[in-house]
Amino acid sequence: MEKQMAEIYTRKIFLKFQDELWNSLVIMPQFVRENAIHKMYVVESSPKERVRRVREIAYDKELDFASCTCKKFESEGLPCRHILAFLRLFGNIPLPNQYIMKRWTRGAKCQIIADKQGVEIGGQRSSMLTWRAKLFQLASEVIDKAIIYEEASVIVNDGLQSLLGKIESIVSNTKSGGISEKGSTTHDYEALKDPSAVRAKGCGQRLKRGKEKVTNAAKYRGRRCNGCGKIGQSHDKRNCPLLNNLSSQNEESPQHASEYDSKADSFSSTGLHEKMKG
Image 1 (spheres, rainbow, N blue to C red):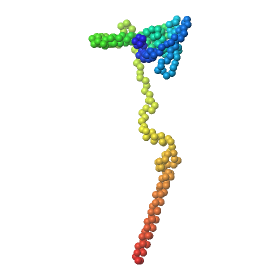
Image 2 (cartoon, rainbow, N blue to C red; image 1 turned 180 degrees about the vertical axis):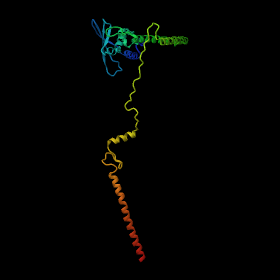
Image 3 (cartoon, one colour; image 1 turned 45 degrees about the vertical axis):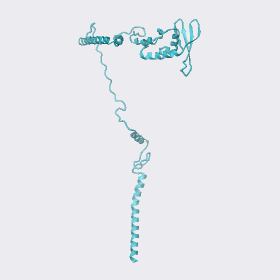
Image 4 (cartoon, one colour; image 1 turned 90 degrees about the vertical axis):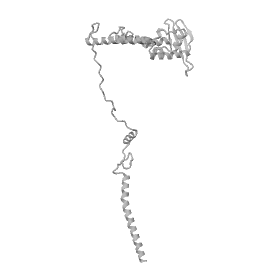
């Protein structure tokens, strides 16, 4: 089953399916009851799971289809581990087609696209996509088979080089003449232009360092006095109390010094006069 779905599913979907397939190996459905239309089975969660869960599987005999109460197939389009364990119980090793959603297959883009009324949607674009998918798949198969042998790889390389030369000559003739081999004129599609450049918000601004950010943030918290350096004060450098006190002290200090000098001079003069008398 794993090899089968590796060739059908896309890579992304196959990895999800592979995870469900491996988890289905540790669980075993248990038969509960049966009636004329359905068979009921119960599947307990694996011992590795912390929370014990019980899922019910209802098998429809007429439709040959099993549905699980986890509703993974209905919501995601992938068979859950409980349904895979149920199919393995009955020996359905190849996964039945009713459990394979076409939208998850590799060839989904190559299929016919229909509108709501069921009418096929044609056109040049759809045919180009179809041919591209077919040629890509064919080239992949050829390369995968030839890469094992050196002689086959040389043959594929020479053949591709020859084909590339023929295709380039066809393209050059078509561009110069403007008429294809079938007589249909080539369509000139208007080239898509680049979108108009828009200056993004904040583009060109200088990145600020942490210290600069802190300094700028402090400006918004309150006014700062350049005299005392305090933030959130109502004064500035011109009427800062600290600077005024310092200036007043500086003005008073020369007056005290002059008084001290005069007293010292008077003391020295009296002492000298007393010595002369003695």
